[in-house]
Length: 321
Image 1: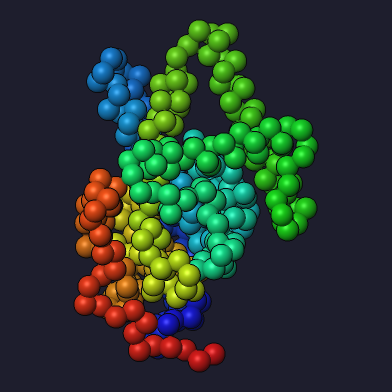
Image 2: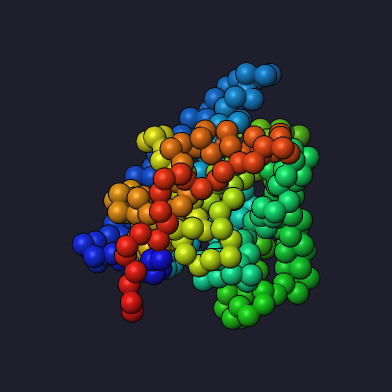
């Protein structure tokens, strides 16, 4: 078993955790270019053809959440204020509150492998035993139900979050209020000016972004051992090509991320070689995982082996302090 936050011998953690904002600037520049191009294509096309750039724009909304995830850990910028400012903007297309996500996500990291663990998007992996039970997960119904409640409670001034301090609650309320104002603003402009621009540039892409995000997150812990704090056994990593690594913002190296969450996502690949031989759950590609997952959903008689064969979890590195 490896210890979370403790680097293995030979790894220069001090060098890995250095945040270099120019790297995130490049990611944001690429995001802006792609979104601008897709928006132009949507407005320049019509009919069925326009669905293609709408779908791709929805995929970019999902990509925004992966970039937002880096901001949650303060590994995009050195400044907490800049991480929050950019993180809030990145969450707006998919209606994801940065501060609420951060509050929940830090608890997920602390409690992973224990009964107290609960993810922000309310994944219920135990229920995913058929196509029909998978559909609510695919469209994140539980999360969006909570989202509506959070916005409603914010407007009533009654939103709470367990043991969160008042400053965090205030930030969460502010972000849900921004969402509410944004939704009302888009609806008002659409009605008054009789325009479909927000339907084309936001609502339809938003619908595409939901299952895209769900499919990116599903492999992280599904089928892994839930009742152990060992990240080599409760988390999955996936070897992926450059496009998939870019799109998921390094989320494919998820065991590495849970091991050393202070390391920026673009450096997780450097940890992979050290950790890979000891992982219990390591897939060669996203398709490799989803081939198993589809077998799991479609055939009640098939017993899917989720663990990686011929690899030992735990390895030889067991820090004592």
